[in-house]
Image 1: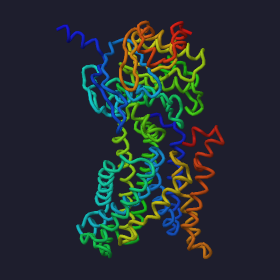
Image 2: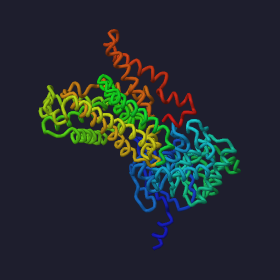
Image 3: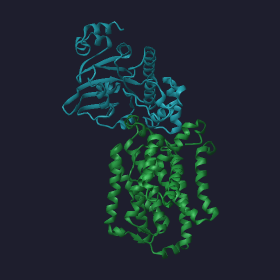
Image 4: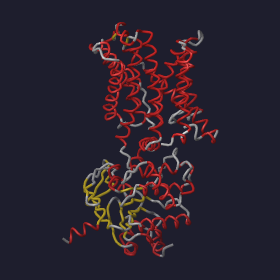
Length: 257
Length: 322
């Protein structure tokens, strides 16, 4: 009884997931839960396997071992398009706009083929609404190729949101942005959560991540080495040692600058 | 659908109608023969454009659908006594089925690998037909002229097949337009721009690509039947000419890949050029070499083709040129 109620509150359950590329174990027996409505942060040094974990969850890679359960369905080894159909969308670390299409068409494609699969007319309504939400409305008729990096990150986000997901995987949406753009983006992320969408976010911009995350998990060499609230994570000696290495940097991080 | 809101569609259909009606109005048989070839080229190029222009997949062996469809339909007419129209539909169906099977197998490949595989298919099919006795092997099949009596005699048959080709071309252009401005078309163009991103957006890429391949194969199959019926004979060498595939690509690139009017303009220009070259004593052996140079120049200097260039140059024409 208690277990099943707990299950209901968990939107994403990752159990013992490993991903091996030949001799390299990129993700090793990772287990965690993401409760509905929360923002879960994922940090770790370069090459720790963060993006690989995302790719395993959204179906780009099949896990070598383990099980991924999304809203009660086992999605391990599903294709990305089937995963989106269940309501799990993502953005890419390296932005992938559809360059020769307009911003509006990019977002419409997200709505057309997303979780709710809409007709073109309905997709346009959703796309306009989502673009207003992320602040791309004025650029809707430009070609996606003509956007700057910050706008392309917004476009990635808008496209993912247009699929009307229950869970959004955000892969470094703040990287390469200036402080003003970061502040704006953080606001968008919090607004998305307010709409009831759960978020799993990879981020290197620490202070921003510390502010938005309910909980944070830490990967190092593919292994989950820590899990907890932002405060617990910054105080965790394992994290400081493995991830930050340098004590001076750790101090800087804790002071939040 | 409020049709007057779509000037590009009206312009495109209008041009095809006007061009196709010239031989009918003038009654000129010479004009009818050249227009027949142009309409055929437009249909082939518009069909290929669905795969090449919208989905971004280069098929070097697209003529295989023309050849196979033509063979199947011709066999049904010559050996089984079918009427031209059901036989043409059967030819289209055969090509569609072949595309379905090939799509399932080949569309896992991307880019150059897919292109190479399509060349292989055309050559394999020619070899197969060469050794397939039911279809006459290397000699092919011939039509007894008596069959034309059912269509009001040979002279009447030529007009009838012209009208059929005309109708198929209009369908090709409408299909080209319809696909481009549909949800399906948006999915195809997403694949063209970034296939991995398209998958992550929820586009079932194998299904969508296979559908595009099938759609691009059906009309070439149908016109294959019309063409070989009119010719009264079919041989493996004539049905599966690899260079016709390359000429189709030149037409699409010349007019503007991924546009509706591009294949129309490209096919008309290329056919005009081809008939000039073939009849000119100086160039008659160089027709393919010139096509190759043309393709090179297009890719280097105007990769978006005539229509793409015009759209870029004259922004005011965006609604008219699609």
